[in-house]
Length: 568
Image (cartoon, rainbow, N blue to C red; front, top):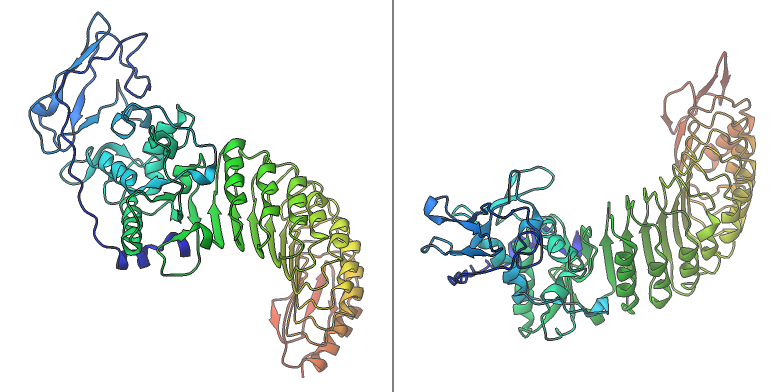
């Protein structure tokens, strides 16, 4: 995935990581006050009760000599007596009571040293150092046996025991980042910051959730070594610098050679992947604050598909006007079922009228989305727009897209338009939208998918517009399952105006209500003479798919209508 380091590229260029020697275990007697229940040094409650034993195991050994007894006394304190040296002197927690070890059972004192988190208000100022990344690896290493298996740690999805060398960023988030920061209400960077204010990050480090954490640290260390960066240098890492723990990937560049790291002033491409995110509003607001600071950004890709916990993204869209160099925006909100309106998105888009040339918005599978003009009104000022993709598929509440046609009127330089209205069962007409295409004389590619629009009756206005779109080279219209569509004569006659057409694809499977074929036959015959080398693909009821041939028939229940004469 480009900037966040493809495994194949990174593995070939990254030097082996050094082993960090575990620190010696403190052999002093440790006493912890007992109030209502046993509480570890981080304040995470354990289910161990007075008079019961909580065992701590040495990492790297199953020998009984490495088991310590942690016995609660009647006075409400506990005494941990250290045993003799082991292969790995560090202690690994054993979960209290029955069941498996849980992330909240871990003791993070060796990472935080008992200090309170330092609040860093500006998201873009939260950086993590290589030393802190190494401390995380050391924390994991102390809990490994001789084979590198991490005692008690398992993949939360598969249940398989985790291995030090393959422990990925997703696992680190689950076992360390989340439990450490949840009770503290902070980010991982703030939890480790300590008393001194850390230096502001000068570099962004991309990632993806499946990347082994040891490889991620190697990559950052090699980059720092190559650039001869000082030890105090910090890096912005999305799951460590924000509460967006579900951030499955962050790409900071699409070019090779930088190992997925880039300087703040150089950052022009950013891709954030939050598929399935359950983040709160405050977490998404943090992302908006972060993006607001990226003044040089030219390409922004946000994947929020399946984010059921996102109800309001206003702060994020408010950051868009600050990106006055942005020319490409790709936004995926598919399946984000809790989003009901996107007026803020429209307002943010409207401020990008001078630069934005490529826009892709996927709002499919949002059951409550009803008024597309909530954000399509933001398309009106986008005079520089060249490439537009809108996906409204499986939004059953959408009944009209007429305003979309009006909002696109100003985009005179539009070259490519991809529109999906598949599964919009309430949609009855595209008259205004079809009429608006007449204004786009520079349009080269037009793709419209209306599969399953069972209430659609006519597409005549679209045919009228096609008749004057002489520059169109690719036309793909899919009306599969539009059972109430009665005639396509005007659409067929409009094909005669496509003087530059190279690829034509028409789909009418499931259009059982069609009665007339005269106009379509006329249009196909004309195109056959005008564009003998063009590729035509037609899907009609009662016939197979044919390419560059016109021997087609339409099975209309009890009768068969001949579409064209045989190809000679």
